[in-house]
Image (cartoon, rainbow, N blue to C red):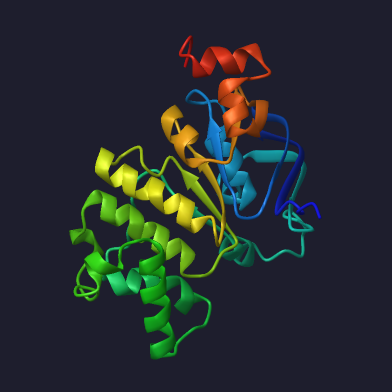
Length: 253
């Protein structure tokens, strides 16, 4: 039986005031997959993923057309609770942004916001999230110490742990390794293959090798358009569009 998409976009367009940033994007994302979005800077990749949990709502003069369904709910339905949507569709940003509090409190923050107060339940959530983000062994003896004392790579894995502590279904990642060293980058890439057993991951990356190594599907964006999307091996080996081939072979970008 064919799997149902967890996110469906149909003719999604977006404008910042009078400037169009996305043009008629139609794409599906399926459960338990890693989906890479590639393309030059300023081509709409980050704008696109921020539409999926309505983070663009925070910017004035943004207008969208088209449809985005999470499961079977249109995400701009007036009755939709945006807080609940962002619990289901979590976000990890380009630069690590831990809260200036303890490692434990960084992870417990989201569950507490959603009403969990029981100490042993929070302990379990913190431990499981840190284990899922491959950070437990490095932090289990310093949970009460400031998260700001962690290395950059550890901080980014902490942000991943913080995002998954509220048990989302989808994880959006906006160039999560661009500020990290190669060793930290490799750890997060390894993590992606483990995390996709539980989550759908949509990752913006400028690193073509990262897309090839880590993703199941790759989508190429250019000037606000989705040029091509498909199985990663196919997109890189036999792209259907000359613009995709030119980008991945380094002729521009």
